[in-house]
Length: 253
Image (cartoon, rainbow, N blue to C red; front, side):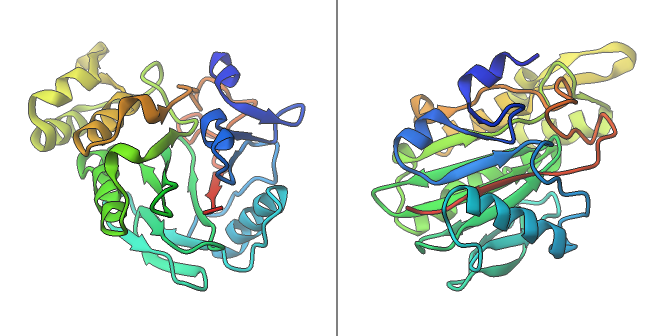
């Protein structure tokens, strides 16, 4: 299922990384790697391989990697502010900055990589959102953190990177019950019944809803709906047993 590739700017053949047309057109340096880049196979807390790929990605954008900022992701909703000089920002699943020259990076392998940017305010964020982060509304927390830096939610440009789609993301009762407890009747719209009492979860719709509730303009959300599990030759998918990582980087211009 490569239809979503037409909604991304692919670089290389096969594509080594993607950029989002709207963000690129507005001048935000950013990219998300594919498995044809130099893949990250170590967990994010093992920062050596992660930093190497992040810095290589920045070179593709013509940016220096010595101030790259990152977090140790734990499927929560904490938001960290990147240090002024870059480097490790702590334990969190969202990272924000108002500093030019401090690129932000996260890694994913089915979870959503969300980039948020208010050009007028000079505020940028990246988010890692799986089902646990969605239960905890990490996307909403990131919008609130950016607002504290001067961003206006309705002015944010948002992009959702390749991630597992509702076609492939089957979950069980503990997941559906946690979503229902956190989000009430809204959660039912994100779930489609599957065999054996399980359900297919639409993380894209769930996080789009959270972004809209936080004040983001729906016309400013780019989501190519490119499923990692449907594209094993292009993307890493933890659910499909491909334990590499995709790296998303962005920097204030």
